[in-house]
Amino acid sequence: MSLSKIAAALDALLEWEPGTAEPMLELPPDPKLGDAAFPCFALAKAWRKAPQQISSELSERFGLEGVEASAAGPYLNFRLDRSAHAASLMEEAEVRPVEQSGETVVIDLSSPNIAKPFGVGHLRSTVIGAALYRMYAAAGHNPISVNHLGDWGTQFGKQITAYKRWGDERKLKAAPIRESLDLYVRFHDEAESDPTLETEARDWFKKLEGGDEEALRLWKYFVDVSLAEFDRMYERLGVSFDKVLGESFYNDKMGAVVEELRQKGLLEESEGAQVVRLDDEEMPPCLILKSDGTTIYPTRDLATAVYRHDVLGAEKLLYVVGAEQSLHFRQVFAVLKKMGREWADACLHIPFGLMKFEGKKMSTRRGKVVFLEEVLDEAVSRAASIIEAKNPQLAQREAVAEAVGIGAIIFGDLKNNRIGEIDFSLEEAVQFEGETGPYVQYTHARARSVLRKAGAGQAGAEAAGKAAAETYVWDEASWELLKRLGDHPSELRRGLQRHEPSVIARYALDLSKLFNRFYHHNKVLTAESVDREVRLELARLTAQRLRWALDLLGIRSPEEI
Ligand code: ARG
Figure 1 (tube, rainbow, N blue to C red):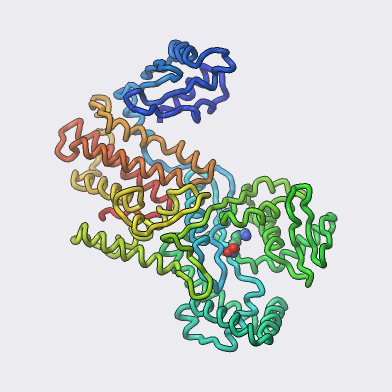
Figure 2 (tube, rainbow, N blue to C red; figure 1 turned 180 degrees about the vertical axis):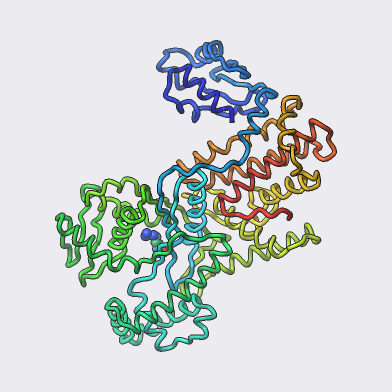
């Protein structure tokens, strides 16, 4: 909003670099004190004066049309002339297309493991990563999303062995992950008394690595059926990927990396294995080749990063992966740096904390699995019964319940700082009150319904609303809503700087609260002339901006709930 103009005027007055004052501006604790406040403590040392004195000097020197500056103790408060600023604020609140001019950002997200359940960490990675993807796009960058499927490793030897012994194709087709998991569990149970199973599994993996036709066919089959199941979930979550490149994609790309490490003298032997020492970084060595000569997870990630930079053209590489893998990524980035890839500095691990469901871990240990699909179904059915009670006449109830139930889960995740642990309560998340996705969706639908009833959308309504802004008597509730509507560029910037979708979720909650307060205090449909025009315009801008925020988070905005 015009706060940026105040900030620019402060920068000029203080002879600061442009952009310095903006993050220092605060909202006064009580809106009656003004629209923005500048705390003068930070200047006290350099000026050798008390902050109170500084604020009073600045209040005399500050000059910006339509803005009144006054000192209040150590703070310099600013008050905008509401009628003079309203129309331009409305203009700033408008949703507009952005120009594509930014950098290419490759985002590693979701990345579940084939033939294993989609864990809660993969769910978090999917929703956080997809939100960041949309935020980068909204800011004019060129993001590329990559699903780095865990589709290679010794476990496939076990999977093939178990399938050949006890597998049932029909069951595998009907519920691939469940059946794979059962086979996996059975393999481990029986292997305790039958050691030939382990040998057989090793042989199958060797065959797979050697390109054996049957092994490859079975492996491909497991990948396909698992992917089909994952895709069903992605569709419900509204997520798609620019690229699905599993770990197996790098099988023929690791040799070059290992060779380069060797040539640069970075490989050392340690207990039969080949490692890169990272003592100077105070990290344990990064394992590159196991003692039997096979590659492992870090080797794959080295080849992956090189591919993303050299082939996909990444200028920035993000890895949206749980915090428990922090050391792994620090090691990989440090090795890249040692290889002379300066762009290693543009590799960022975006970690997140654990999420528990009603205090329980979504565990993949034997017999204790909660499948993500069950969690989604449960959320949708709870949403359906709340909707049924609230609005039994609603058309398209099923589709709305799906949008609300899934939205509740996504929002329940994204409203939190990503790094903290989340104790997720489905019961709370699906409510239409409180800090929830359904609350935001409901507020959006409410604004849309006002507009529908007003027959809005007729030509000239927007222009009329803006023209009326100057004569409208700006009450506190209307004014606060309007100001907050214009905050979207700084919110998006802040969200991207910190890689925090929660900034957008919090913004959507704020707007919803402000709109509901505005709507409670002001008649809209029954108001007349100027009042009606301005208030309808505020409803239109709110609906647009909430939809913008929900879109960024990957949540649908039904017209009616
Ligand atoms: N599949 C891995 C897991 O489930 C996550 C992969 C993350 N991405 C990466 N480039 N390492 O733990």
